[in-house]
Amino acid sequence: MDGRKLIGSTLAMQVGGLAVLAVILSNVLTVVFFFGDRNEIIRGIINAEAMARLTPIVSTLARGDSLKLDEGLTVYPAETWHADPAHWQEAPDLAKQIMATSGTTGLAVFTPRLSGISFTDLFQQVQSGGPLVAASIALPDRDPQVVTVRIQPDLPPPLAALIATLISGVLITLGTSILIGRMTKPLTALAAASERIGLNGNIDNVPVRGPLELKIAAGAFNRMAQRISQLLDRQRATLWALGHDLRTPVTAMRIRLELVDDPDSRERLRESVSEIERVVEDALFLARSELAAAPNQLALLDHLVDQAISGLMETDPALASRLEIVRNPAARVLARPNDLVRAIRNLIHNGLRHTQGQVKVRICAEPTPSIEVVDCGEGLPQEILQSPGEPFTRGDRARSADGSTGLGLAIVRSIAQGHQAELQAENRRDASGTIMRLIFKPS
Image: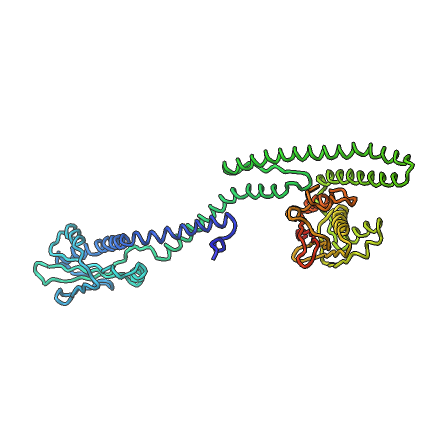
């Protein structure tokens, strides 16, 4: 069994659980290592109570006065009382102390034998009247007598030790939880800020607080975030400027190609200019998508797929006959609908472009919302499968000579990241072709 399941998965639970285990273990070790001392402590308590109880009794007998018998005091002739070694043991040191205090001689004191008696048993004896102690005294002008008397030593109840252990464990756990909470809160903020990197074009700083090590980690993260933010800003600015600067010569080229007399040459030039325009528009879209707002509209994936297919059919109505749609009305996500429609359109167009057969679009709701685009083309190289959506990656079919911009899947991945979704790719096992997936977090 995994030990983490016993004490929890969070740092606070684990440290708190270890603290409680440490308290319990320390008490167990205390009992084990000091078991012999326990008997000595109990004997000291009994001897102190026995001396306080026996000294005035012995003094009274030595003076020849009569004892006032009570429920816990009994006097026997010495010849009728026998100290059974199984239950009694002689206490010569205690006898000497009583004789020195009372001024008597010829005294023998017997106390209960503690071996074999648990602390709980002794406490129960105290609760039921107290254990017996005995004193055998030789009187000058009378027969020796034995006095037995019950004593009430002040023993802490066994439950008190358990309660004290539990209270100390609870206090240690609470204190540890507060301390660990101060430590884990900055870690949680650091993890949350890391998750937000790349979303909405912002990289948030984290508060620099907590223990020294966490302050160092937070400061290092903030410096790293600042460097990444500056790098992304430069990339976006470059891409944005490039897109805008290319629009002017592209527009001029489109005007001039109308002056070309040869129709075939003019059409080829028009296609080339259109391809350049798509590259420019895709580059500008990539730059804008990094700054897009967070998804905030609940949308049905069925509807988004329909819109994406409608956009494709505007340029080629015959594509509808090559599409097989597996719908799921329960699949819904938080989205920027226009952007997500573009991502879905790019995925479907990517599949249609690389196969002459059918392309299946499957919408799923469980275990998480997702869209699958399954084609029957030649498949993707392994390096593309590991990181789909890298623009202009070697072997990416988006770079094939079919009029694509080379940024189609890069746009899909950028939009997916903005929706905290994941773009996955794998080659089919049952046939040739590729499965492209957009997997979303549950809304």
